[in-house]
Length: 154
Length: 175
Image (cartoon, rainbow over all chains, first blue to last red):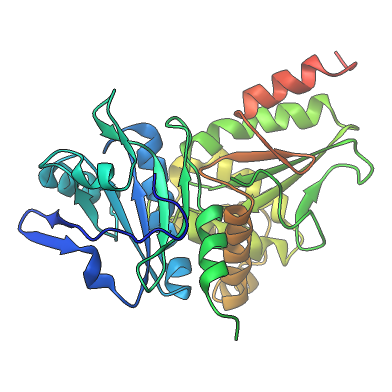
């Protein structure tokens, strides 16, 4: 699993059925990557619903959040519509789990991404990472603490 | 992740029960969340059973994107607090969770005995929404990941209201 100080590898994944999204497009912004096992599962749904409420807090720290799982772009679309999510879900679908593996958070046994969080700074380096037990929604306090630590105080 | 309540219970909070109670329960709740609705009667039971031992604090954690009326209901309860009727409103909302709507909230406010003209003015006040948001942010900082979340004496409780009742019953001399 990538740790603080590691360069965050760039990637390009489908964010909608016809649009690809790459990490480098967010250069100059802090980025939160939330890898999670599966659309629709109860814990993931709660976790994504929580982040959905927090966009304005993330915005305060000039941060964008991206959800990533191995579900397909169509599955993401249905899930995102159903939960009214206002941030992109990326499909780490083909080759399956490639980006999750790049970040060292692929769960081979279940064929899913692990539940893992990364905060990446504006220069593209990992500022904080956290691997959560699969059954536990890690909340967002760790993310906010990490964002605070990389935001210069005025 | 954090499991400590931040900030500690203070003058900004809505509190029920004796100040010297040995057990302080803080709930982060959403008035439209069904799980909070099911927790409500269980909390009442806890309060009844442990009248002298427990004090109960409610903080707002509205999942406004998932629940259309979570925020209006939270603001309505804060408006009721300005008329010293926070708990009346809190109870009525949870008891009538199925009829949550803007109209429904006015009906509930009437039922809670509020001065409706004042209520109407107060719910427009930005500081009430800010109060709700500062509750929400304190929840995030404390490691709240969903509703309801409970803290017992400042530490996050890993379980629902029924688990809380069972735990208290097990550890208590009050039977």
